[in-house]
Length: 90
Image (cartoon, rainbow, N blue to C red; front, side, top):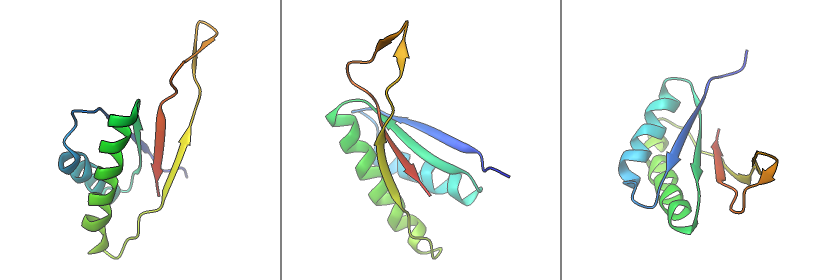
């Protein structure tokens, strides 16, 4: 049975500590988590959040594995100029 996937959108103005808490909570509840960010500032905040979440979940004996990637999505058959960066945590 596939686990539920929680997608968290991260923006340049996102608070990394709050995103990290959400990542850890969702993982404790048995969900896989991915962050979605567009742009360098948002990707930076997402990476900070994942780093903090890794520390939060280490006390539970978990070691987060981060798999960054891109998924090009098209709207009206036009590809996005800036694809979102997706970080899947397992």
